[in-house]
Image 1 (cartoon, rainbow, N blue to C red):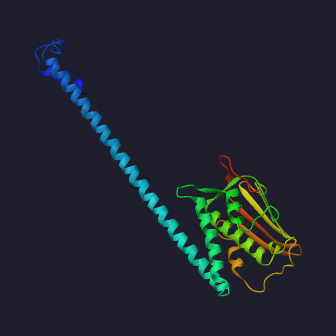
Image 2: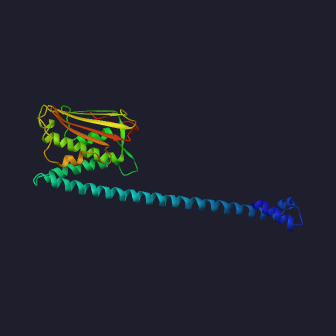
Image 3: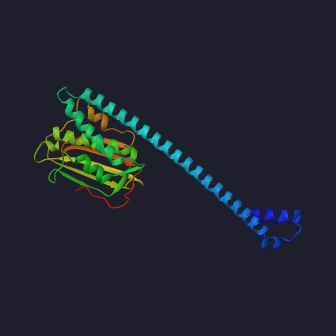
Length: 258
């Protein structure tokens, strides 16, 4: 554009040919004019890029702030619900330890999600964290394929597994030396991206269906993130089947539950 402008001006007002001017003293002026125009164009493009980068950074910051506020609200709502339900279904002497255990399970589940925008959590890590306080090579068998669960399933499943462990330690298979728990899961059987998890207890004292709804009823039920939860009180011990939709293959190496 700058060169074209110089040629038009020369044709309209110049007595000499453009070639003569380029090799004469006026050539330096024309060259300086072209260079200044190029610098202005480059500067304008740099400014436009910086403006776009600032706008993009502002949009990302707003998104992160919205995500943070959403997580904080959800966390407070979960803590409030856990505290309320634990107080409702626990004896006063049992309340502190029961609430502390559920808070630790919630903390471990929240740590799995991290502070980034990660949309999934790996099931082996989730199972390991949920069973860690109750588990030994003698009491537990946990097996299943590597996969990642959708974000909304991570906390409910962690709390459900913690509740199953707590109940097993107080009343079920983990309350006796001979008791065992088997936790198995499959992916893709019954539907693409469908995880089916089966909790089975054996070797413990006889179990019976509770006469009134307790805390476990609230945590071991269908809810957001858990498509199906079925609890059965079999003669051999408590059984629980959980289904979760939207699982995806695990990315990268994982440490399998032992």
